[in-house]
Image (tube, rainbow, N blue to C red; front, side, top):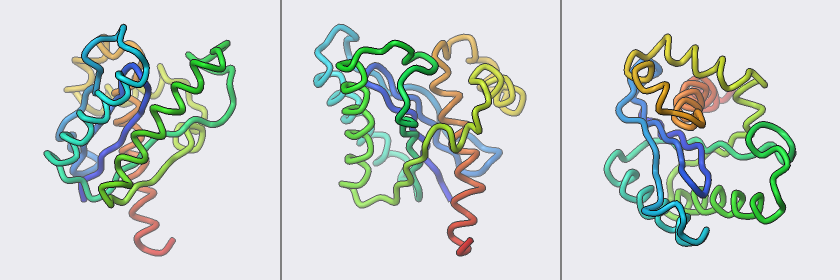
Length: 166
């Protein structure tokens, strides 16, 4: 089973493609061409990159982090209504793109899979398990790639149980 996990936003979307809970096929960012582009242009560029990624890796399952619905935590503390709307558009575009390609998609609330463990701690644990990520940890300033890997690991356990009717 190949899982694609996505941590979407309008500026960069972290992703991880995993063949098993111990094997990362590829992980990185989907980014717009220019960070200064209008929000919709950035989101559509990320969508285009996502479609390429989906066709390249052909995942069996996709897991997408969705916000908890609470404004005020983490990097979104004090975020304006327009910034939250743009963020929501980005998450929705990623979700709709995957559904439009008739792929199996699971939307996961960030609080469900993180169990409220701080991002720094989660990424340290992931770096300890995956040497390739450990080498890139300092370049993952927002922890988006680490979150995608963590979400994929969570998904392996959870989606397998769902397949077994649990």
